[in-house]
Amino acid sequence: MPSMTVLAATAVPDHLRGALTRWLLEVTPELYVGTVSARVRDELWNAVAATIGTGTAVLAHPADNEQGFELRTAGTQRRDPIDFDGLTLIAFQRGGRNPAHHLPAAAHHKTDDEEPNRTPRPR
Image (cartoon, rainbow, N blue to C red; front, side):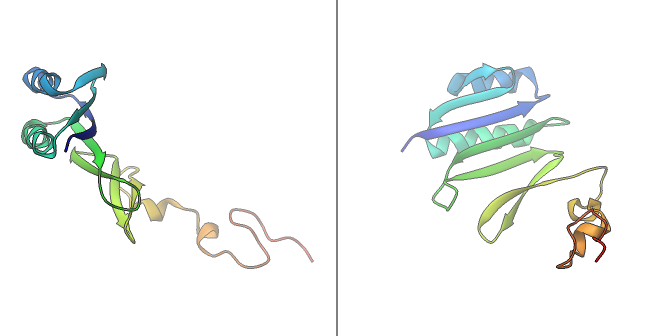
């Protein structure tokens, strides 16, 4: 059954952009939206992933899960979808560091008396 598909692709070859516009509307530069079958969606994604080069791509489509959608990525991403107990969350990469390691130390060790990133209140 056809379903809504959203694909964002940056720095992709012109021939791939042309192939995508045969099936999807390019609503803004590098953002494609359309209603296609799962088979067409998978074939389009395979073409994107095979020719992405130095570009990046993200595909969002309906899925039978808690959020109601699934994400796929190709190319070098600064944002990585991660699974967290069945939910897809986005981990933001900053300068090659692990996203959890950029938090200040105070944010990791909150006590009952203090809030993160603040000095303890005098008693």
